[in-house]
Length: 600
Image (cartoon, rainbow, N blue to C red; front, side):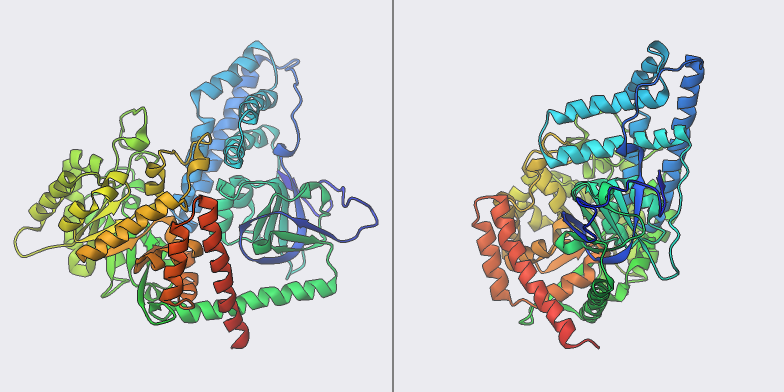
């Protein structure tokens, strides 16, 4: 991959007389970015011709390929470690998937055959493999499939870079200037290799809103727009660019006046940040004073550096698998206790909900040989695994019960399906607690059967937490990572909204404390619906904490209930989402108006 102020594609405009260009695309990561264009030329932007080996022996070419592939694996592992440190395990999991792609035995055999039998260069063999992928995906429809195809190509292009020994160049800018990255495709490697520049923004010709590259751009807080018509051929490196990410607009060749306007817009966002900060330091509530608890989702003690813990009402979801995944072997009781205690000490007097080990499906431990399953997402995972893996489950329970002395620790059981599972888990907790000690035990509602049998579960649980991500997946019988069916993953479908309403009403009738910790809780649209439906505890990622509290402070309960009722009564996912999106945009304008009225 290479980029320079004078290199890259230089077809500037539809007409050479046009100095300014505005392109409209798809918003991916919010913000306003003002900087200078830096065009990146990637192997993905050109087709590698079919070149034969010539004088090179096939065995030597194969060895060269394997060496490059191993270097790419090591590079991806390094990036994975950095991303884990900066963003957390969940975002870094992207690279585990990419490593698996270039270690896939079947793909390697195909490349080996092309090199040895057809005597073509390794780069050409990789291109032919990618062509086969492309041929498969071209027969299918849907943006999610194209996104998945891009994620599949990206790791193989890392191998091509190693084979071609491409060196990355830096864009030389003034002391106060920052680059806007221009590329053909938004990939994970594009974001992680360049985010330390630091970047003012990213503008790409291709790249889905839910691609891995998009997820990373949002995590790093880089204003990003994709779907810009041939932007990688139209931008001139070094020219002034403004990325208006929330509007999906990118302006090139802007003059001094427009740069001043863009700078003012960025300053207004900073002022808005002040309003958000003010809201984040106060208890959560609606405009008419209804009390809300906005908690935070974290997966490691390192996450605490990303926000001010006093601004959260507690931790609604601590993913304990972090304590297992970062170690070379199973952590003992004392190792786990140290992690749990360090989190509790940062939230004195506030609840910290620890979800017990949730591995299986897409989350594996490298030191545990998980059995091969035909459909792991529907298989041995969550509480199902813990009840079979009893000795290790008891060690975790011992650590959690001991941590109770450091604060308000609570246990959340994942992937609960039946009342019998809950009873057995509670029996083990009571066994560990012994006489005179206790700890609240809750159930995570992810399986539709648990949602339908909620009355029985909620009577025997101390609290209930809804995981909207998996609940949506299982409700629609769809693997959200499967490109053939991921378009059916619709969290705003009226069917899902009605299940969420059923859960809220059931828990309210029984007096069982209820929270929601899925991705939907951290979205403006989702927060409006959930609070309007009766949820009073929302657990969100740290980046959403301030916005969530500021948004909900602008809306009275009556308006929230009206929105919830309208969304549930919709006929389609797009109709329900449209109702909530229009309201969220309108309400957010009120938040912005307050920042203008009180700039100090």
